[in-house]
Length: 142
Image (cartoon, rainbow, N blue to C red; front, top):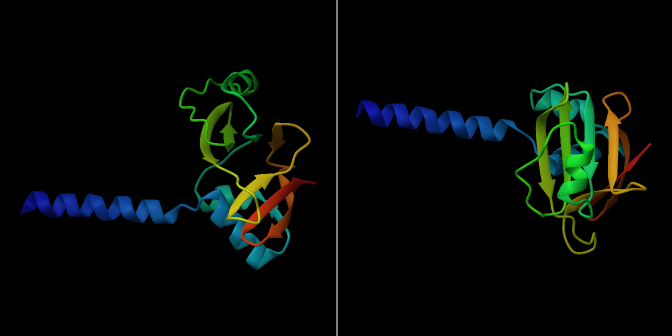
């Protein structure tokens, strides 16, 4: 019985921890609904409890070789799923997320519109304009 109580406690802690975090899509959607068509990722990191100094965005076109050539740390857990974002602090990955961007008229998702397959921002200039198409959001750096 004692083990069941401990296991239940850990399970509740895990569930609470998972629900406290906000993924990129949910954050962007919430910001559009509450703040309009501009977003900064500083509030996202505050809500999720981490600090960062550099943000890297890689479109689905970026290969693992390009990612590892660009980031100051090596990435080994690469799955070719689509777009990805890395938040770094002192050249260490603090938070990362990847997603598959689909056509905006068919589903929900996010795409970051950049002139290149790689975008690098600091916490001071990671401000984006948001264009909403149904449940699809296109983020364009300012």
